Image 1 (cartoon, rainbow, N blue to C red):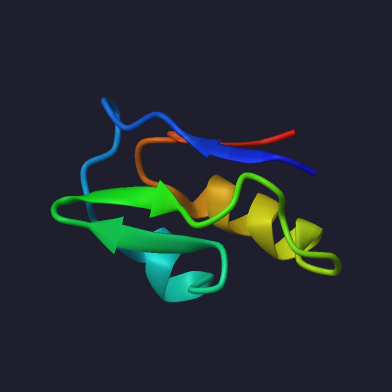
Image 2 (tube, one colour):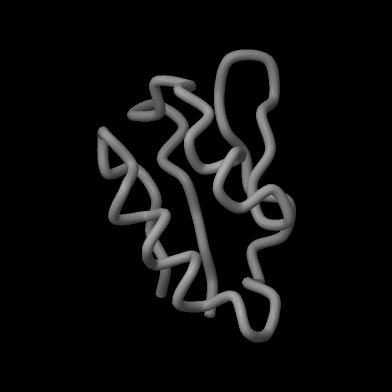
Amino acid sequence: MKVSIDKEACIGCGLCASEQPDIFEMDADKAVVKSADVPAGKEDACKATAGNCPVSCIKCE
């Protein structure tokens, strides 16, 4: 599974980095993906975090 963030849509709330620090981190005022490949066993957690994003800027495919 791949994950990406629409950096223009990101408001920098930090929810994703807080929920999944092994997948996301904060870079200045925006969230970034540590690696486009979601670690094995974290697929459902990644999808849940994407669903929790207040601006829906996380895509898990």
